[in-house]
Length: 236
Image (cartoon, rainbow, N blue to C red; front, side, top):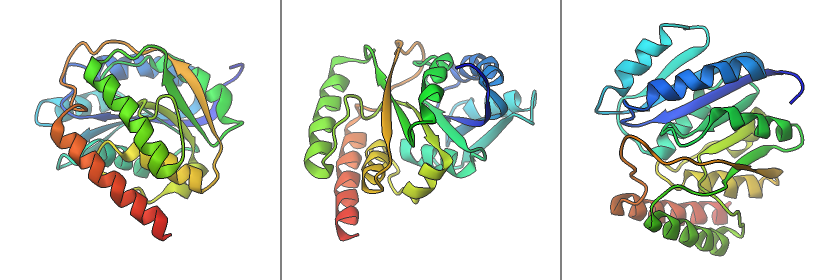
């Protein structure tokens, strides 16, 4: 990346990430300063029950021009957090990175090098640092999405993606509140014939906090939302 892009919105979805939020945002700030002329970081608190919101507000006070807090009073789920991020992002390039500290924000440069040639750039984890069960779930999700929606990506639910704002507007409104939000994004992008490119990123072990993706309630909700999405796309 030879020069800064004109503008960039980056948002992090957080749910009970009090032990991760300060490091994640602190490390992202110099990256944003280095890649964009106008930039913002949105900390999306999805109804956390710990000190995540309190810490986000404390961080935002240090630079209210560039740092904002978006607060969902109720915990909606991963999809609800992403929808709040997309809704409140104000710049023409929009990125999100999971707030669990498992990605390096500096790798956004790889995405920005491609976003001029694509509507959406999605991450592909080089070596996924999750437990075995989550690897199994990811492979099942790939089969499920191929059968229902006719697309295949090696890493559908990678929590590092970059969008042109025009692409976001074409896939809105998003309905999924849970983990199927990434499937909905890609299914609607396919329907709108948006161009999607992939880039390999590093993935690091979670140091703090709880990973909810393998939770039975989350899985059942994902199955329900995927069937509702299929019916909605089929009707339209």
